[in-house]
Length: 180
Length: 196
Image 1 (cartoon, each protein chain N blue to C red):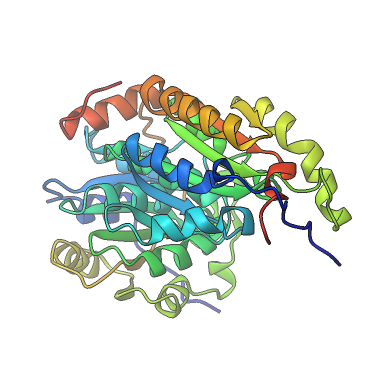
Image 2 (tube, rainbow over the protein chains, first blue to last red):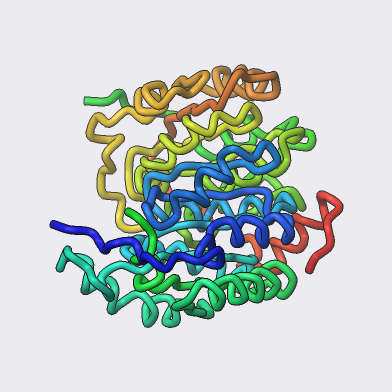
């Protein structure tokens, strides 16, 4: 077993978790829920240290879909962090967001598509985008830090201001630049 | 074998919510949604017709967004069994304004009345206690439900889960709106928030 090597040409724009934190705070996100994930670990740390944000650690990703709907009933904006493998756990619960037009923003780090060492991640990797689209979500995708920051900024506006249900897929090639 | 319950579910829910004041209620799909509606439609109700396993977690997100309001998840044994992990999540989150009340007929009443896990000995109150809930309990009579209603109106040190053991029967359905956007916007307006 091996992990992707950190890219030696790391630039400041590669600190995308800090940029995402800044964007989500600017969008007035007050709740964050997550299933632990190495790709999201920095963002999880930053939100967990933020006294103005309520964080929930989940036992399965679908819980976060329900929590986000409840947060919106109480007028708070919520963001959900997970891996692509967790998308498969969410499909029925996502009917809640779709039928109720609840604002929903999911940030999904991809597994099973780029320098993956675990073949069991590959089938869900293939199913991630079509499953989300089949249940009615809009899927956006980013492969570079610059693109990701812009994409999440746009996704946050669409989700919270236009009542859309959006998953942003964070390409594994981008995650691979980080030290796991 | 678990003791046979005699309590009528509609009478139990009516007694539980008789003096609900400004309690916000999220009901799980199936009979708890019909039970909640049968007591009287209310702008502070959010009814589920699907999203099985989600009632208590919607209530968690709501309770965290509105810490000054009391929030009740009214659900069934089948729905809560599907969301067992959520009991751990709520135990860790430890909201002081969230109660889960399980209307437990020990059967999957929507789908043919097969015995559920609670009808085969699984104890949801013991699971909640192990997950760090501040209070748990089971009640079987109308008098106990009335005492429970008074208890949940009072302050709590953390989340609480109570089971009301009821007869396994399907009373006539009392159907709220199935328009989730309408129910959502009505609920938000009730709290003074813009619809969209």
